[in-house]
Length: 357
Ligand code: TRP
Image (cartoon, rainbow, N blue to C red; front, side):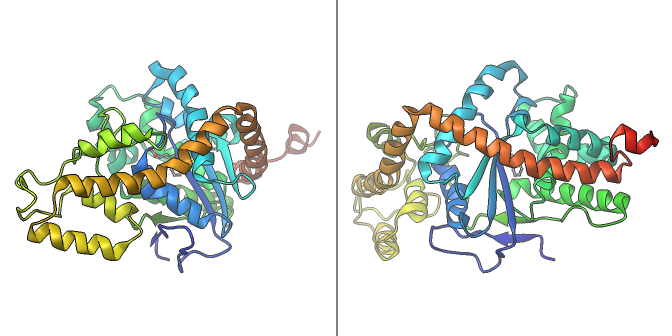
């Protein structure tokens, strides 16, 4: 079984490698509101898959706490922001379940059981965790919850019996570790109680921040999905192009030019974009004209999202209802999985059944 497949990137496009029986689970840490990088990289493919397979989006607040326990109130507040972003881009709660990780106690219990199937050295070797530990400068002071979050993520994935997980490339080690745990549970159970999963990789390359560095909320270099027209203009204005392309008549570089990365991701008119690239390379196309085009393209993407978000923000009771219904639905699934996994650990049945009273 291939463990990695490519996701469709536009609505209407479907991936020949997904099956109608696939169950999709993906998650986001609620560390802020989502930006255009999330949209190009994964939100668009979730929209494309909506209605084709069962799909759950998990707002992973417990995972966010593993490195942000000092900012717990922010994490809690961002749960609502992420839910608003999902609904604003067109996630339809009638087709896609939106659930909150901390409301699903079965996931926490699965995590505790799975912790017995994983060694500390295996967790320390997880490349995603290693890179994040370095990035955060934890050195030896790694919160135990952070070191173990791959196990909690394995609980998220297997708790929904997910077979497809849309993720960025940096998350591939998580899929591998989940499948190791799944195989161990199945061996304990003596039968296949959990399915293995495949990663669904985005077919669009990672979108850079406006300065050409990795897009991140803290660097202020990402374009939020809720950006106003003015913010879009300001951020496009600040975009890194080619420092040696001074006059419009100078030949310029397209590779590494952030404006072209965004045009590639969002401009529907592929023929014009390739003509613009030609012209830019040859010389004769100025940054100002190019940026003006991108501003228009991005405003067309963001304007409907912004409008819908504005409406939804005035009706928080509706969003709360969506989350409540999503949690209820997700509880049924995850509790059923927990029953099977408890069985694998000889913890099935009530006290009376177990002790013959
Ligand atoms: N680790 C993911 C991230 O940092 C979030 C996440 C939590 C997730 N649970 C998940 C992703 C389950 C996929 C499946 O973005």
